[in-house]
Length: 177
Image (spheres, rainbow, N blue to C red):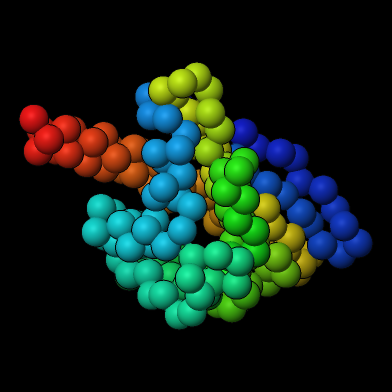
């Protein structure tokens, strides 16, 4: 596991920053992308990690660019209880998905931009890296809220999804035997 923090930069009266978490798996990138690349991720996370994201509501779209989700956070979590995110990039060749928060969440805390980037990077034939990044811009008045930004949920999701895929492959293999 690797976490990288990029120093924040001042942009006019705004501060920009990014955080990155990397999780190595012994799964082929294509297998991981099957979950991360569309709507399945939002369906699985509340089942696997209800304490991290108790509910993800599919508002519109087919899993491609323009798909909108309403994401619920657990009671007691810092900040607003929900955010609406829209998929802004889906690259099925390079296994990259980007989603931008368009309503609620960190936007209600003075952030002007809050975006997730999920990349599945093939390492070897049966190994890959899940790189989960957050990029944000926050106005000067609310820059102390940048300390609330964390890749903790993305790290937990990467670990849980990897475990889920392995269990599914194992049960499918047993069913075939």
